[in-house]
Length: 362
Length: 258
Picture 1 (cartoon, one colour):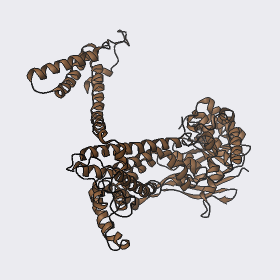
Picture 2 (spheres, one colour; picture 1 turned 30 degrees about the vertical axis):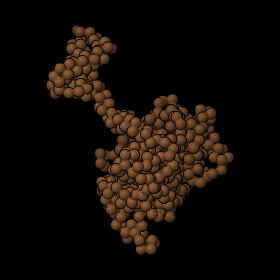
Picture 3 (cartoon, rainbow over the protein chains, first blue to last red; picture 1 turned 90 degrees about the vertical axis):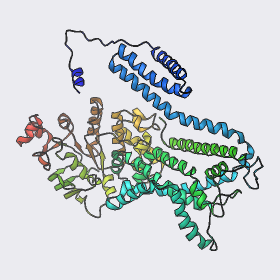
Picture 4 (tube, chains in turn blue, red; picture 1 turned 120 degrees about the horizontal axis):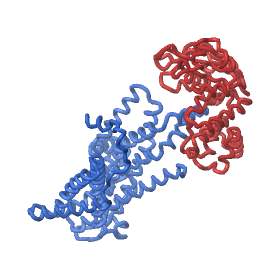
């Protein structure tokens, strides 16, 4: 720490302090990058130890080292550290975006093959291993209905639960609820599927299904709801806590009752954040395969009634087609995956736009 | 419509901590009363106990009696929201509702208490904004967000919002401490006008401000940190600032202590 102390000591006044310092010319960074890549290529191919990926990785390391050395020689240590850290942060960003870009590219390139009208109009009913047709209409219907029902159940319940925890809950009961919501966040999706299978499909639903277990899209929606609920409660809770206390006090001071303050001041203020949390939960639920497989059973035909008989979903469709022996199946799986991602993307964008419209445009 | 506030033996707690002890004072209608004193002496606590904002914090409670025109504010049959509609409050930092426009902010108190008629709301908004000396500045942009105004304008917006529900008493908790001198002057002018209609109680750290705007001044103090705040002296502002009867008051206003 002694170096820090020394550098903070005032300089002797005799020497006039200049605000200017020597700077590297603007072309230094690209020049160092080109040199680093060239050197890396020479090393890798010269020694014959790898391909282009290793060149890029080695080049990046050499670039950081070279940039640090150049900046250290000309601009001084502080500036060299600054340049190196900036470069590191930018590389971290690139590293984080690469997998995403790769996923999107793979989805589009492989999903484009079956991206036709037929895919969105037909089901897999009566499609054999040698038929190149077949589509995911039934799976799209299933996903929309199951996720829709699950959202209708969890959004009111989750938001009310969060309001209770933040605005009303005092003492042990609220603490216990928070604790169990935290525990629920960690439940694997297959366990919620088993829970709904044991509780709803095998025990409750036979009462109004002539004694037969009722596999249905609704059962899948219940399982998805169990998955979504903790995400929505926790994110809403965090957002409500971010609403500044003076806003609530401002409303109380106008003689506004507490429930109306929450409804008209607190919730609108937290709305954009709550919408983000809900969309995360929806995106997670839409991608679940295991619970749907367990309690809705899948199915090749179109079934628009979520309360009776088997239903499929897009994630389940991807799972089934990817494992299918037919040589036309993988293309269907890719297109279904692309459809699922696009669906979630459209929902997210729509929700964000809706949430923004409620705020005032600046 | 202004009303008299009487406090007798008011003691307020935050959990086990006693913040103020045995405060006795009477605030006459249509006057401005300033509460001054060093930080932590309980001025704000006393102010917040007048419209029952004190109890919003968990564990906070008030003992003793506080009345408005002889009605007990803390009687068990009293509706808290009715108390707060009668005794409005302006806070230290301007707190316009961020999701509402200027117009919606001003009429928030009316709208959230069930007034729907647009003509009534528009009339009330114009009246309140004119009283808060803000009308000319915002009349062309009532639909814009309240948070987009400057700090001084936001504070006047909050004052407009408070007087739009037509309270009888307005409490101000250091309303100018986050504002520049020009905005402060605007709000002090406003207090002069408002005292024709309302009883005003203001907490301030600025003694010149207390001397300028108030008719009566109450000086609060504490012995040492952790002790409850007490009312040391309560008199006409002129008397407090020219010839206080208690030595401690004199020390405080001349800057020898606190």
